[in-house]
Length: 291
Picture 1 (cartoon, rainbow, N blue to C red):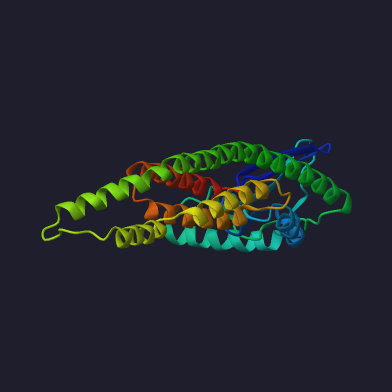
Picture 2 (cartoon, helix red, strand yellow):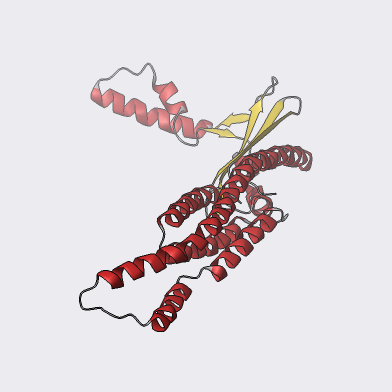
């Protein structure tokens, strides 16, 4: 089973006064690009969160956010630096007097200046962090299920397209034997119409024909293409992340299809090859979003 790199998961927990919400979003990327948005209180846990995400998400452009919301009547303790407030107020008052400006809102302005209002230093308690970890785990489970569901859709589409390639290969095998009589007929017609040719050495003609047809033989390419398609299906069933591996297999499939096309020398076979190439390109596009 394959997983999509696109994922979304969210979970919330109300701890009686504080609501914790963890949200995880991801898009496709060759590597893990992790962006965290955390409240300052959880900054010391950033390394742990990054490590957990690296192990569980593996690849993708990921955004992880943790939000806290006060749902009760509790208010964060805060204090006012009176000396600093007075200092700011006196300075503002002096400037206002010099400029003959009104001084009615100076206190409000002073309260908004840096370091005047100080909140108590916040630290995360062990119990609080356990709540966040549990919520993170729920969001991650939701996120992974989303990836599995998206992966199932991708897998169905990819299997269908590999099946079309296999069917086109069978159709090529039907058309392939028709080439020899046509090649023989074209060569005979060319030699008959060529100026100055009165006698044809049939033995030599047959030897050259066999040599020419051997150059167009696609037996090995057909065998390898079947093998690569079977290997592709087997890799789809693997439990580990296999998007990159599937990408490598499609490269090998593409090589065999291109070689068959270059050796086809037949309009019907060329059309089937074009159809195979079209399906393979669509598979490659889908694999860009496979973990």
